[in-house]
Image 1 (cartoon, one colour):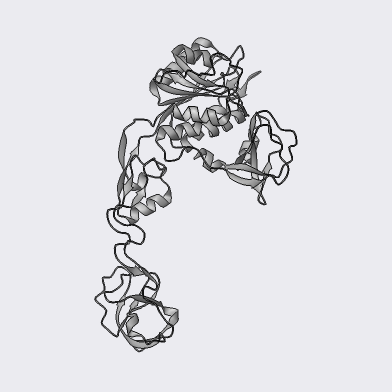
Image 2 (cartoon, rainbow, N blue to C red):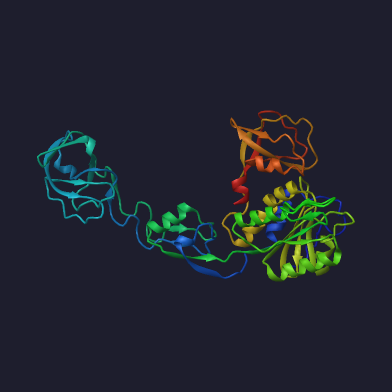
Length: 414
């Protein structure tokens, strides 16, 4: 278990808020990639898994020079200085056939992907030729190498195919398959426990009683964890009770690589998560200058990292994107932890800046960032409507057309 941070904001001046950049840096520097064992899996099963080690090419891709189009393979030296010529068609080479050497003064009918015969140094597209009675007439000039894909054009032996830490995409699988790779070593999925707190919560689909509401945070966290490549353990829903909260967090830490909680990290009389964590471990940071989502906690339950997210659904969604997802990527050993924003013009007028960095639920329309009309932390419909988050720096007025940072949700949550 890491030692407590000597500048722990939970000790001393707890009213001070960490800026987002400092909070992210402290969060990511506090953990190392999980030491969970990797496993060898078939390439066909590798989509969305994390490559445990780099995959490299053993052989060149393509293995031999091949034609980039349907046409005629020939020797450019057999053409006249003007590029014209006429010669017999000595062989026909479809894809999948090994050709013989090309005799001087002859051409070969060749098709896309077929091997280039020994002796040929160019392929002329069929549109530039005219074949009749077993002879082909060349009507346009042609340079050596034209329309030939050389051996090793895509990959040379030893070239990287899939970097270690990459979350494997369809195009990675295609490239690996082209290199003849049938299996690879993938990291075992992180096991993440979710503890949702609140007397008022009932499972979705169950009729709420007086003062009760359906639990949106548990199902949403499960979905977010699945989306980012984790194994989400069954959600534990806990009443606002100190002993029950300590027990739920302790059991979660015993079974998981990471514990996430929803609610209970603020300063209310019914917020028991902070005390439960400090009773079994310690907190390293608490409260971040972000809107929505100020009540955020990170620490350790024994040797298991813990991240406490706010209870408001939108605050939970935003803070998971800003802190939970980067923390998970770090634990997964990913090659990328924080996404890069896109500067886009604002379609918004906010002359009166706030004191905290704010993340608006937005869409990009006609090249401009347009916010959802109601940015309340309980309005989850805005997160469902949005295709990204826009960062509004603290103490910074925003006029229409000013460039601001836009984060696509696909980058934040992948």
